[in-house]
Image 1 (cartoon, rainbow over the protein chains, first blue to last red):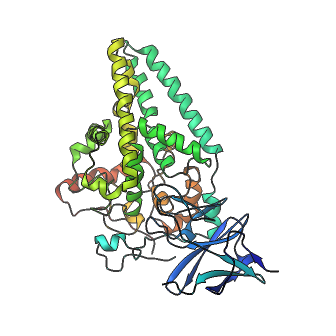
Image 2 (cartoon, one colour; image 1 turned 90 degrees about the vertical axis):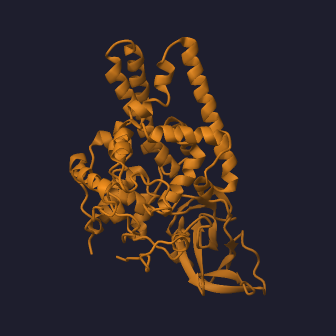
Image 3 (cartoon, chains in turn cyan, orange; image 1 turned 30 degrees about the horizontal axis):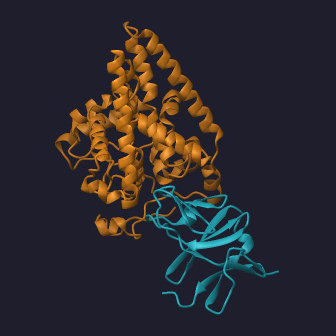
Length: 120
Length: 336
């Protein structure tokens, strides 16, 4: 069964769908790091599905995959700054800059991350 | 166990702010850490509830004793309990005291005012402290800079150095004056909040002083802010154990920070910050879970100190020597 996260954009030809891992490997209310090329991402599973964002906190040197998922919020492991996972919105100091989010989908049990083919 | 330190061993502004710098972190299974990091409201509701009851009871006792010699121990008790606001400011700053965010923020604002740490500025300052713990020129919260100033350390048992510095900062910020160093770590978007918050603090204190003048009594002043001075001894006693005398400019909290076993009363008032290496290594772990975290990682940690006396046997001679030799520091043995 194919499942597309409800907040993700519809897959289109401008996206490259990259395999991350079996979807079941990420527990509900958890996060995992995914490195691809020179980029690093945080892949989340919340009660309402899977999500993805840039891996590094927009504040300082910390990977969000080391943080804590609280409902639909990711808390940075270094300074406890929080982001809304579905939108990447910065919720409280010390984070001020929103997080870039990416579409994800599950194809035959495999979690995939949608990346722009034209990204720098 | 993985060790990830700055490969150059040289601290530069570029290196210190880049993503290439990594701190040593103990190995702990993700599932275990996730469980330890779990937020709860219950422990802090009990802790803060008991603290408020003790604060009110000791305050009432001090009020009743005012005008007699019994007021001295009564106000000392009140001031000691009041000064626990500093530990509460700290825990709420990390967002780990309460699971419910607005309760956490409410107590953050209250305890920040009580402990004379303007809430907005100190949020940013403390973030910087965790990014650059005891990295000279980057960490704005190095309590003992070298060469150690023994007089300053001693008078801070009554907050007589740091307290006036904070009050002066609040006064300056209330008039919109921020130092270049403060402008470095407080982003533009937060500066207006720092200024407004400082203005509110000043207004409250003007009201407190005015009420003392009108009532022709020192009592209002004795209950707000001044307890951080006359009751600040325990905060300094515990706080000094965190980093004083240890190594600077190392990306391993085990060498720049201490974990000290303390009795139940101290741990209650100090909110378990005696587990300070663990706190710095995993700052998202709530205070009530730090003993559990300590047990999980202690085989990878240096020997914890057995108590206040044990740790001050090291701190006192260490600081005396650092007052004469700025290159001296206590080198901690860490497991290979």
